[in-house]
Image (cartoon, rainbow, N blue to C red; front, top):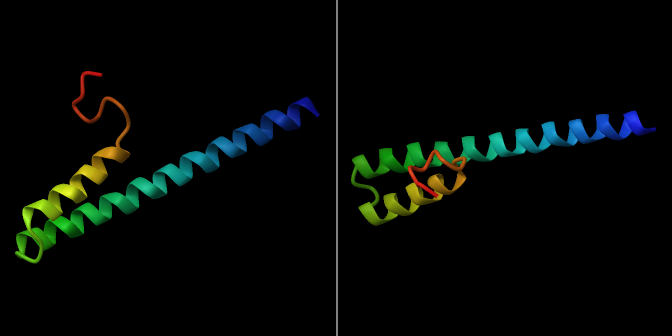
Length: 68
């Protein structure tokens, strides 16, 4: 029974990592599409900044350039 608990915990961790990966891919695609729209003058710089700020929120700590 103890071993089953470890297996379930590992399985849950893999599911969590997959969910995080799916989220960052979705947000990254949104950023790419937003940037393309910005280059085509379909959105303004404020909209692009909002999209990029959202993307930065999904990055792992330390990847944002923050010294915290």
